[in-house]
Image 1 (cartoon, rainbow, N blue to C red):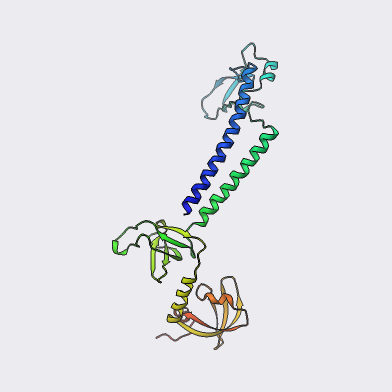
Image 2: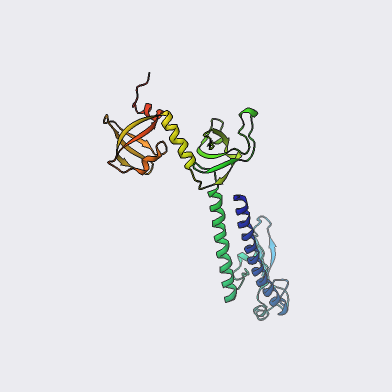
Length: 279
């Protein structure tokens, strides 16, 4: 199941994130240990200045004044020896050289780069998996939860089929037209369904479509004049030229231009293009 795949990816990402946190924490611990062992000033935290006034008008601390650290033992020499404490406050970013940032060794940089690479890869895989499993035409879905409204109109939970179309109804609800393997059509809300196969074998549904066209379509002989990614321009025996979408006659994709073939065109398409007379 897709949810299990995503859960595994998220767990793997969490584990790498924890490794990155542990690496950063070890660097903080090293800096803090160095600061303590060298008797760093706890008042100014090795910055050499302290806040003596803050207007309190800004949560960022941008309206404040500072003065020199008042601790007698806090000197330029002692601060150089201890370094600054690995604790940043909202005031530090307004003073040059006061923001503490981790200093990685060569091995630590290599380890961090490796972890970052894995996290980025997992982020892409998680997003790809989420996109892959979004309901779209051509994907097989199952109805995972019951819908609202009268019971006799609800799509039974467990109904499985291929999505033929996704649309938004007059009430703003996004819905999917689902065709099961028996040819039955169902209209379910997108929120009710889950993708169970993003790359299904659609032979069963192609057969159903072909049978439907043969039973309800109009047989015509055409010459293929032009093909695009979505449709073909054909010329009938009466010299009428019409565009036929591959979604309506899929076998058109397999034919070459200038080839003359026999097709079964859906009745609505035949009527729309005046291929048959209507009363």
